[in-house]
Length: 71
Image 1 (cartoon, one colour):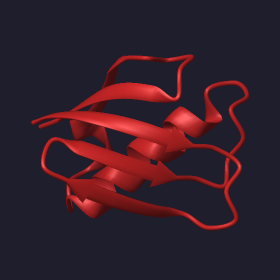
Image 2 (cartoon, rainbow, N blue to C red; image 1 turned 90 degrees about the vertical axis):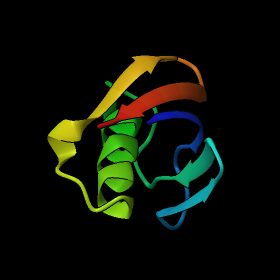
Image 3 (cartoon, rainbow, N blue to C red; image 1 turned 30 degrees about the vertical axis):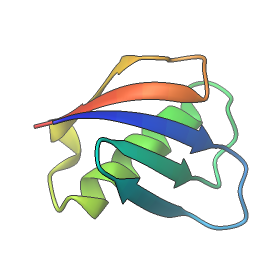
Image 4 (cartoon, rainbow, N blue to C red; image 1 turned 180 degrees about the vertical axis):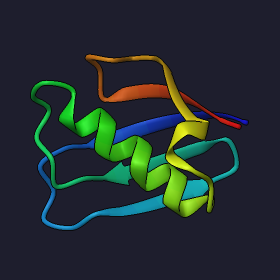
């Protein structure tokens, strides 16, 4: 599944909101050294009840708008 994601780094809470092919993810991690991307991928995996290895970031490494693939 291809998912367009908007990430909110540095949030007070961690949560995922998915609607159709889009999602918003709030993560506590800051956008430094890829930490927010890793946290977002882990939250997506948990949300879809998949292993973390099944979530890949394919676009938007340095942007708040990203595309993830969930296998």
